[in-house]
Image (tube, rainbow, N blue to C red):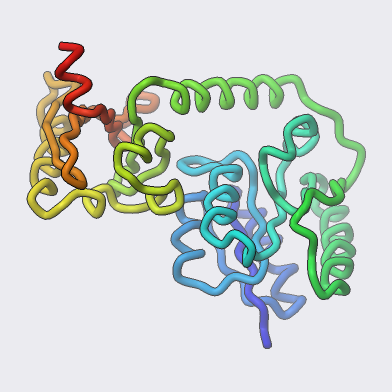
Length: 268
């Protein structure tokens, strides 16, 4: 029976390169170009093997892998992280959560190395759910600029995770790209239940219009940097602050800040 491999990477040419190698090995290849699209493919396809880059827009590799681990638990398919910054992550690979790690390098060397890697894992009936070998396609050294980028991304993510209110980041199609633990607790949902879900699916029919109006209002009213409404979610009253997500002067989505209404009222 033909197996299906999912390749998730924002580098179009690398997706084509890896997809072609997998197709030659008789895999059906599903392609995605960021973690958000990867989740959509996972939910509509039966995946046997996943390759994912670590640094991607919208939903990055570690968040995608976390989603898969939580969704499938013991029945998770093998996950391979393929990235140009594997070496820079050496001290924190356990936090990424992949089964195998392949460092990107020259295409010719990668093709040989990749086929050897596939020969190795296909010869085993099962794969361990533990960190295994880091496969390199040449001599690679950590790059200072990559280390600085990773540190910066970790710092920004830590702020979102540790801030004292619920935070939800929406893409332009109103699907959830990121949600912190407080927001998940307020909504009484698990992480994998929320990631990549349309935000309106979280609200009841009575509250959806309030949310839609708020999203539209901050877009159309140029003088408005935020709008606030009170919503009832699972019989709880929630204060919702809606603002636009602007990156490099481009409006790319929305940010929702959530707070328990009664706690907020006490503070006021």
